[in-house]
Image (cartoon, rainbow, N blue to C red; front, side):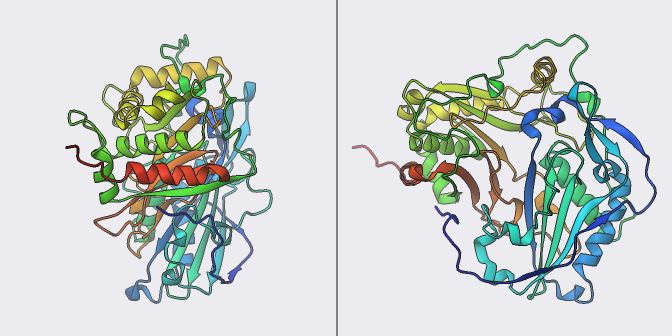
Length: 449
């Protein structure tokens, strides 16, 4: 278990050039494209940061990663030209993209530090995010600003850091991974992406006669928590703690399950994290707690058919509920069963029911009080495969938890035996209990008899 919420002793300087706009390398269509109901929901109207780190490649000594990536980015935007546009509000407040070719923000930078010196500080939550991704004033609104902010920082070891911030209304993490891999392919010499991008946001619109056919706990009305817990994402005493799930922790946690109960690593980690967090927040025993999973709709059995190349938000947030008392006092298997129930809700009718609910209720926000926990698996998004010519990244994934949403990411993209990192937002006073519960769940239970 570890955390980077305490001050770091590293001191280094980052020198940046003025931010510039990288536009598509060729003329692109000027048009307006409407976003889907899923894209449009209030819960995705935020900017999310990612960070990728790359080793030096001696065979590419003459190549400048800044120049290579900047040029490839402009060529990739010809194919992904909506990303060079701006989000606008249309009729009844629905969002659309003004494909005007204005471009994405790009920053060239140098830092007098090496990857070795940075060590594991690039793992989430990264304490140096503001150094490696400068927040250009006025760039972080959802409406009317560049949809991508990218900073490429050369390091004195010859490696570099590629950091970006994405307007989540345009893409989910899988869509971002697809775009970045297209940039990587072009950087390595391709003329065009191997997977052509597909817009087709209408596939995730509401039906002609909207009908909500499921109970959607993720958009529940009960946003206010009654216990001594997180009240909102703007709470002043929030800190981020990071759980580490390696082979030993996962093996130990499985021994807390009954022999008949099988589950994936994702399901096990989710159940452990949800239970530890709920206990640490000291909720009222009768309080209803929610779990919402970010589930990819692509390639799911009986699901809406999203074509290869679709790069929009192809995700749902299926949720389940329990009382705090039942979740905290029951064995771990109780939480695992609920996680599995949420995960397997995702099918064609479910995602259509979500779209119908969103349009009927005016794209409501996700429930983001402390009694709701949202988790996303970012280990299979394709972001960890992005190769600009220097090989795959060492660290690749979200740089921190945003809006109380937690995620999973690997601690190394280049090791066979890697750990899963899970950053979690907590009030400072809940951290010690959180650590205690995690330690208890990841110690092998004593044999009876």
